[in-house]
Amino acid sequence: MATIASVAPTTRLRLTARGRRLLAGLAALPAAVAIAVAVLGGGSALASAEGGATAGTFTEITVMSGESLWSIAQDLAPHADPRDVVEEITRLNVLESSSVSAGQRLAIPLEYAPQS
Image (tube, rainbow, N blue to C red; front, side, top):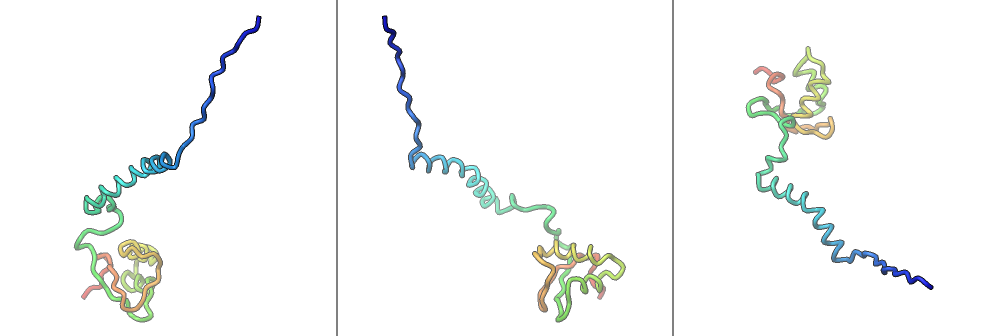
C-alpha cells in the first residue's frame, strides 16, 4: 500500500514598494518626533550646559591686524599657559579652528579680560 504524503505549499513573503515605504517611515518616526520636540521646545533640548557661558561671565574684544589666538592669549594672561587660554576662547566662541581675522569680535572669559 502506498502512503500519500501531504505537503503544504510554501509561500515566500515578499515586501512590496508600499511596504518598504511604510517600514522606512516607521523607522524614521522616532527621529522626526525628537526633532519636532526640539523645535517646539525652542531648541532648549539641543542646548548643552558645557558649550556656552552664562551671561556676564565674558567680555568682548576685537582682533587687531596681525594678531592670532596665541598672541591674544599671551597678552591677556601672561602667567597662564597659552594653550589653556586658547582652548577656553575657542570653546567660548565655538570656533572650528584657531585662525582669526582682523576685525573679528571674540568673547573673552572675564578672568582674562583686559583691565581698563
